[in-house]
Image (cartoon, rainbow, N blue to C red; front, side, top):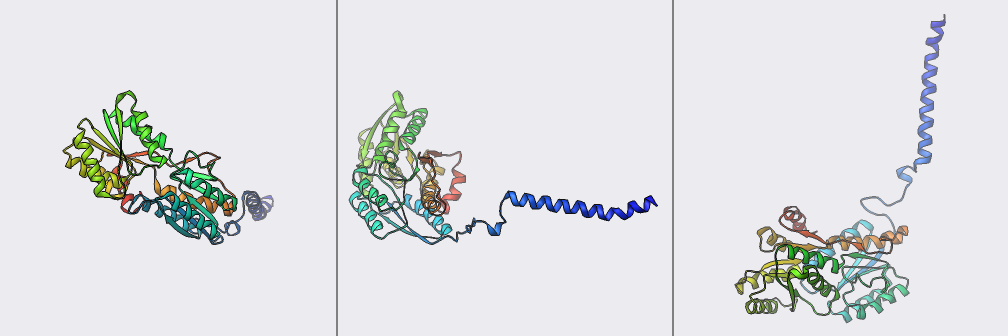
Length: 337
């Protein structure tokens, strides 16, 4: 009889255990968060937040492929975040300031901007903030983005990058480095060359050469003349990928044995690193700069987020050389490195 009673109670025990498990799971759910369907309307693939309009304004020179990578990053973020993106550029600081003013007048929801010339651009950037338009800055303006009214900054510290490049040049045995600047008056380019000089220290010397970065023939002529005239130059560092490609021709024309190094990349230059024509490139990850500039504005407007904690969000420097160029080449082929 007792045996039969035990068998008759077993289903009731199982039922009680099952009920306890269900209650435990319910308790976990109530304290662990809402169901996915009740959470934010933002998904990982595409936002369903309100459609905002952002302006991204740069100092890009005509034909400089470096900026294509920044635009690719910005466009990818805009597509994900349901953003209408207006891109404009001018390498004349006064005209770039006018583009910023146009964006203010258009009542855009956010502005991402580069600042290579603080005296010319900061007053207009400050007008944007006065109009309650959130502004993030990137690529150029690392030393003064907060004073100009930037909420966040994405880029590399050009002085740090220059010092890192100078130290690598010294380690490679460079004694006389020619630093080629494609535009006069841009603070970030000067910071790179000055950093290179600092990084070289007592191991070598550095001289500057200013060229017209919008005229390949003029650049070729200027660099060839300098390399022909001064055979003590054993290393050339350019500050942009298109300039590096012209420098390859200059080295050949001048019959120079100097090694070539550069800041920044594009797909064609990546192939030159693979071939050994360029020793390495300092990479500031421009795709990341464009992407984060747009995405951070969206995060601010939709969730009140601000990145960096009041400090620069660094995207570089890193180096692309023979050790990692094959992997980077895969991304460069699709226009993202």
